[in-house]
Amino acid sequence: MKVFQNHNPSEIQACQPHVLEDVFRFHRALPGYAPTPLISMDGIAGDLGMGRLLVKDEGRRFGLKAFKALGASYAVYRVLHERSGGRLEPGEFVGERGRELADGITFSCATDGNHGRAVAWIAGLLGRPAVIYVPEETVPARIDAIRSEGAQVVVVDGGYDDAVRRAEEECKDGRMIIADIAYPGYIKIPRYIQQGYLTIFREISLQLEEEGEEPPDIVFIQAGVGAFASAAAQFFNNPSNGVRLVCAEPQAADCLFQSAEAGDGILRSISSGAGTIMAGLNCETPSLTAWPDVRDRFDVFVSMEDHWAEEAMRSLAAGGVMSGESGAAGLASLIALCAEMPGFLGEELHLRDNARILVINTEADTDPEGYRRIIGKESSLDEKPG
Image (cartoon, rainbow, N blue to C red; front, side):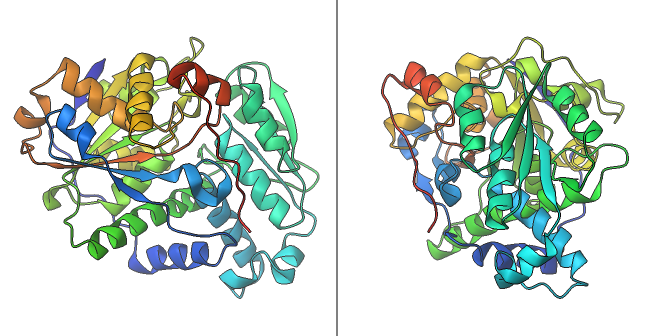
């Protein structure tokens, strides 16, 4: 495990209240919407010598086993909203009006699995085709899940960045890329995707209020290109409010860690040829729109070995939460810190023994074979929204 501490996290621009409400209003209008559970797992916290552990379980989001539909759906809605001249209402998105506005579009993206399935699902709701590009090491179960939404899957020689390039090269004949990574010339849609993830934190805030609980003291957020992490940064935008943010990445694909550690503010690309079981985080280059938020706001960057994700998956399973390898990464970084740097959270981040900790389980068993190998038993979530 490697750790880089940002000793001077700064306040960044918060998401505007009207944007937060617009995102939340849109998601509540989608078929099958329901807030995902916020689960207390204080037994794990006690084992780690901490106070309170809350797990936001995204494994049941829209029956897709992952959180990605929040970003993809909002981005497509914003695109169609603009096509309508600003007149498309959330309740019209998957109805006749939304389908008319989407006419002629083939939706496309590169993915390690979950985002591609989300884009394919949205395309299906709108009655449109999707073409999804995946790296060559993508496990068959994730490819099958994308195809189950009616999409065409193209397997690309190479890694995630190669899939991104291939999707861009073949973006023609009515294709529209809905990608969560921003790069030169492609900025607007990734910003919408980042905003879409704000619903998770809005739900958490409401759930804590309903229970009369205070906000978390520290949030552990897994990161690939950084889109989800940037949403956390925008929601908890001011470090003076006392919420610490920790970015968790696999050591084989720690582009954000290496960019932060370099200290010059410039993002770094890495080679992820070694691979990681945390497939959803196996990204080589930070998103241009996400990196500044993550760079400036996050307190700590953790780069960890895969075995910590396996340990976190087993801990969550013992508490009744099904988590995939990437889904468990936030908790994995907490476990790794407590094991390898036991004084860090208290001495460096000044957390109390009874600190409130939040992690997000971003996926369930998106690779059932891998889940069985790690957990030792079979489990599945296959329900779809009505």
